[in-house]
Amino acid sequence: MSGAGSGMRVAVVGGGAVGVTAAHDLAVGGADVTLFERGEVASGASGRAAGVLYDAYAEDVDAELGARALDRFREFSGSDGFEFVECPYVMLARDGDDDLAEAVEGAAERMRVHGRPVETLTGAELGERFTSLAVDDVAVAAVASNAGWTDPASYVEMLAEKAREAGVEIQTNTEVSVSTTPPGVAVADEAPVTRRFEAVVVAAGAHTKRLLAGAGIPIPLKPYRVQALVSSRPFDGPMWYDASAGVYARPHPAGLLAGDGTVPAEADPDEWDRDADDWFVSDVSDTLRARAGYDPELDRAWAGLCTATPDGDPLLGEVADGVYVAVGWQGHGFMRAPATGEAIAKQVLGVEAGIEQFDPARFDGDEEFQISEGMAVDTDADREA
Ligand SMILES: Cc1cc2nc3c(=O)[nH]c(=O)nc-3n(C[C@H](O)[C@H](O)[C@H](O)COP(=O)(O)OP(=O)(O)OC[C@H]3O[C@@H](n4cnc5c(N)ncnc54)[C@H](O)[C@@H]3O)c2cc1C
Image (cartoon, rainbow, N blue to C red):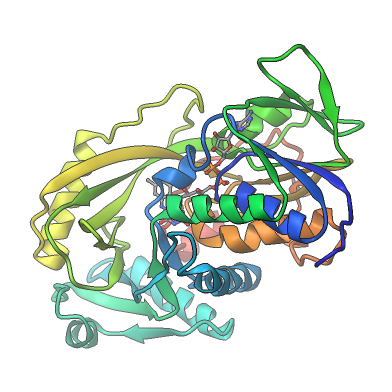
């Protein structure tokens, strides 16, 4: 990609994991890039993410993006305070949850078809492998070995630094609006002067729909709350997702991080509750006790916004001449950011990116849809819905 965009003037809106990756890659590709961030870098969902990383996806493009992202996390690991910690990821369904057990088995099979290193284990086999997990009620488990965790903010800060070194001008505390024909941005607090660019990439997370609506571009997107907590009691085990309970956990420098707590209702990106709900802390604590014999000692708990689309796939591509969007990650935006940011940068630079499947033009923008939980394993009924 090096040099492909020689001198092309590009604006990136949003300093989350996706925006900084795109800005960095655009600059490395030769573009003249300005990144606008309304707060500080990582002040959106990326700074609130759990940092669970894996390539265990059942569909082909997802699996490729997941694998590419992990390769890049490993390449960047060790630089500027960012570290990728290798750790297997276990996905399990309980006895009696037959549809879910079938779905976990089926998904693991499709992951293997797409070259992902994923094993299917019985509860007993899982118990032999990971003694920290209670397995008596486990019907089936899938174990992905290409996985790990990190502190998400450290990735964004590290890549923002690399982007600056590559020549990107990062303007923080700078909220912008977007315009089209020709592409441009206007800084919210300044006199209404539109700065023209050859391309604008909108990676503004939960604000993306509102931002593009202001430019007359409708996209089908709903922000929704998800939650996480950190407990200060040590946990020595794999990352795991109990699909029957809808709860995941991973080791954390302070002890353990756990989450999900999806609230499947559209949230206002400017007015939402940043604190975790009591029911979430209580439900997750019950699952931690049952699944890992782990009695949590709450350090902190919080909420953040994810973004949903009608089909659960991202909106990644051009939405108007020279205006590009990168959003709609359904709770998987951080772990794929090194690849999705790279892909949108490639598309802007006119390099084959292989993301046609996520072309936002597959929607009119006014679609009605329900928010579905991001981590959930799709059962046959879900897929037919
Ligand atoms: C509790 C929780 C746990 C999660 N766990 C995981 C996980 O384990 N793994 C995973 O892959 N994903 C996880 N996610 C999802 C993940 O956080 C997001 O998918 C990902 O961070 C999205 O990155 P982004 O760059 O697209 O958006 P963001 O990080 O939200 O960045 C968008 C940026 O745009 C800025 N912005 C908005 N409007 C404007 C404007 N008008 N002008 C300038 N700037 C603007 C915002 O301030 C923000 O910084 C989790 C999310 C939450 C809330």
